[in-house]
Image (cartoon, rainbow, N blue to C red):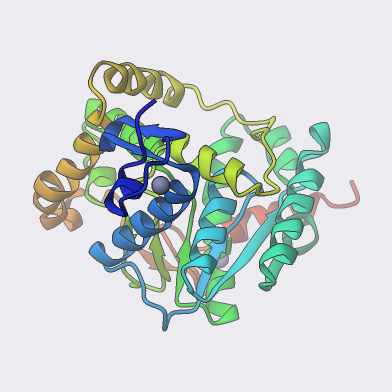
Length: 312
Ligand SMILES: [Zn+2]
Ligand SMILES: [Zn+2]
């Protein structure tokens, strides 16, 4: 096995434990951890996501991505607190186990964790949505996003960060390019500014691959939950993810190049015409005052619908 590149720079001869093909980098375990965090710091800085003066809210699910992100941000000295939305998914005790994982992580980091009980606060759970509509997966995403935005403002945070990784970003970019989904492409950037009542949002792990994140989570022994949502049935994404994996296999570094070249060279062209691609204008919900494409907004409509069925 090769020797650790960074140990070599320090005139030491440690065998590498990890090889990162996309970066052509052999590393020992210790240097992998410091590489992971420094690479995150460089991503945050080069996209001007936030600084150490910001109050950061990490949307944690209990999975390896969001817990690795939270751990690395705190280790880098950022003021990052967690927020967990309890979705009420009882299959395999999924929501309960996820909640335990994020609570264990908060204790380990000694950072505040906000827990939001969706069934108690909104009057419906994700399984309730599922009984109502077949599009519950995208609905769950929309509801969570809107609700997190509202909570971040209420709790006084300046930026919401999520654990989206390079594999997520590259495969969704491919899917959206194949459908020429211009509205989406014009907003496909790892940091979105605070505007129209939205809090700033960032995806600091956008340059880290799933494999790198899993390695970090394992080496750091993070208390993450390995299972993914039992209700998830994203039909098309795994297919694009598979294609991206094959391309990466043949030519390591493809995902990173594809994604970063998009951001550098194509995104500015799409972003220039962003307003033209919007199919609906942004309004303000007359009930809750949040930005939305309709008024009352989706969240307020759902709350009302479920409230009117309560006790039936
Ligand atoms: Zn080393
Ligand atoms: Zn509303």
